[in-house]
Length: 208
Length: 208
Image (cartoon, rainbow over all chains, first blue to last red; front, side, top):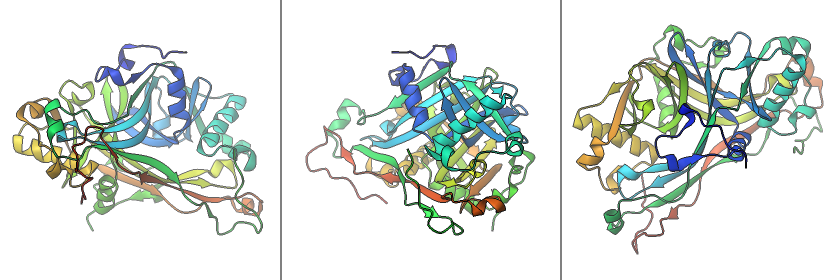
């Protein structure tokens, strides 16, 4: 089993029993998520913005307009992907919690300039949104590629934290007549809504 | 209609047509979300962590252990709440997008010390998780309150950004035989799973 690198800031200090250590868990959290929260420092203050991403091997790709402030990052960034799996209702308000799986990645991003890597990175982002989509839709033109900034972030410094299962109440509280347990939460995909200008006969593709 | 304050960093530069300007939109995004992503600066680098929150009027509350690094923030923080509403599949890979509603709040947090405000803030956090829960569960002891750090963040500097609706393709691409449209995404609440040690006869409460 490949293990995550341990650095001072990826060591889980609060509730270390929730720390994951294997690379497979990191990949699973990233590959089943659709948006990340990107943290950058702008004028000395933190800024957190939601954005798409994709993974190719040990590299995470982020993209945006070449004019976007958040992608001008020339210093370290932090990328967090979180799955909320449920509410944990305890007998005391103090022990209320949530079940979740989250990944936090730190690093200095690299601006991708090679045309080959740029295509591969954008493909990873589009495929993470909807697998199979890259081969169905019209590919990027040279002008579109030039207008898109692509950042590559190594997965070499990352941490995984998860919580699952029932609440942990104080022993004496188990005697209380208070409902306790888990309320599962999941993401649902609805029925696709065709664009009003869709060409006749074009049906929703079977994607991977 | 109350409008959001405009500061340099809350002005939406990229795609300004997606900017929301009213306070009601901000409150709606916050009140229907369950987790936020908190951005802080630790040792000169950004850190983004998922956490619960609650709103009381014009104040957002965040809590954690008094030992948590991310709650030691004595400088500005950024709190982002995002709802992913759907995937936007365009005819070209370039115009793929997501439908979402997001709120970004900046400010210097205040450590809450007044016992009354601490209780009110924690109540807001628990009620945001599951409305009605505060009155059902055992309230916090003095010791539990002492172990909990509560941060208050004014909503005075915030921005709202949303996207909804179909893809925006280049005019010539509408002739392509490529499926395009929206794939809705929503959060589903599953069937509550009672704790194994639940007292006999205690049923899942009807919450507000």
